[in-house]
Length: 231
Image 1 (cartoon, rainbow, N blue to C red):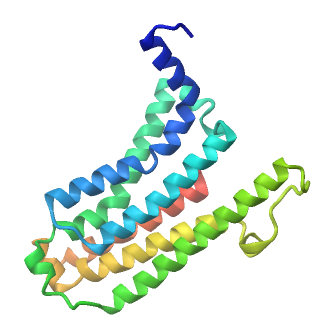
Image 2 (cartoon, rainbow, N blue to C red; image 1 turned 180 degrees about the horizontal axis):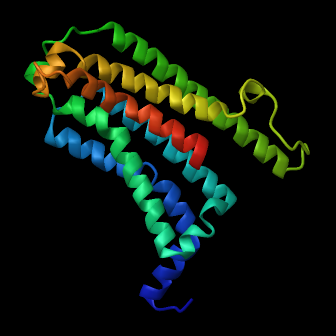
C-alpha cells in the first residue's frame, strides 16, 4: 500500500473489510429502526429489536476482531457482483425483519393507546423473546469459550458437545428463530386486532387480518431460512 491518504484508506478497508461487514450487521437495523421511530410512533417492539441487534452485532464484531477474518467472505469480497448479491440479501433481511416493527409503529399513537395495556399475545411473545435471546446468547458464549480453549490447545475436540450444544446441533440458531417468533407474536396481537386493522386502514376488508399476520410471521420464517440454508 502507498502512503498517500486515499490509498492508505483503501488499503485499510481491504484489510479490514470482513470486520466492517460484521459491524454493519447491526448498523442498518439501527438506522431503519430509528427512522421508523422518527416518522411514526415508537413501541416496545422497537426496543426489543434494537437490543437483539446490539447483542448480535457486538458479538460478531468481537469474534471477527479476534479471528482476524471471516472465511465466508474470502471469495465474495473479491467479486463486486457477488458482493452486490450479499448486500441485497442483507437489505432484504433488514426490510423483512423490520416489517412488523414498522407496521406497528405506523399506527397512530392515539389508536394504539386504546389497546389493552397487556394482552395474552404480549405475555407469550415476551416469554418467547426473552427465552430465545437468552438461549442464543448462552449458546454463543459457550461456543466462543470452546473455540478459545481449543486455540490454547486445552482440548482437541472436533465438535462442541456440552452445554446447550449437547441438546441441539445449532442452539444459537434455535434461539434466534425463537426470539423472532416472540416479536412476531406480540406484533400479530396488535396488527390482527380490530384496533390494529383500523390503524392500518384495513378494517372491513376480507384480507386485512391475513395481511397483518403475514407481515409478522414472514420475519421468523425468513430468518430461519437464512440460518438453515444460507448462513
